[in-house]
Length: 207
Picture 1: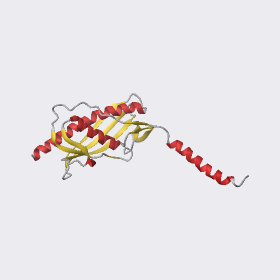
Picture 2: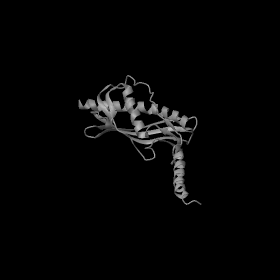
Picture 3: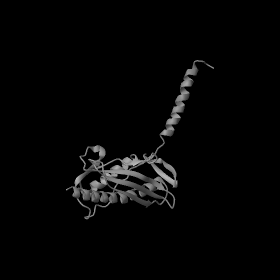
Picture 4: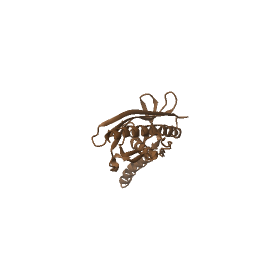
């Protein structure tokens, strides 16, 4: 064997391994970006003169990800291998909640906590569940714990848990996405209305 060929062979082998690894990492996947299409706020929802900062929700490591989580049985966590959210689940929910307040047309100013908004109140959110559950039939489940805070003192003014579920006709990612959109469009208007009512009640007491 020609000794001069050894360095070239040694170089080719790791390159081949890297090429194989990259081909695995570049497996195609679909990105899903939920859109809020909830109905406008009813006339009974108060118009408010204060501003709100929505904090990025807190979530467990299993949910703080752009992977779409599936729970085939209680306590068992998997993900759709070829699907991703357009952002991490907490950031995704924060943006949808902000949009929900904007779409309500009932508040002077709203934005993320990092937006520099001179807020009167802050909305803190904990994500308890944000997954497709398979027990009892496939369904998207969202459970959120909300706290309304005085932005200056950080004092908790009100707290409430919210939950929404929506059935999925099957367990594939595309069908699951539709169920997630339905659940989002149920839960966001509820939490928007609750926040506006609680904040306005506190604001009136200040005045």
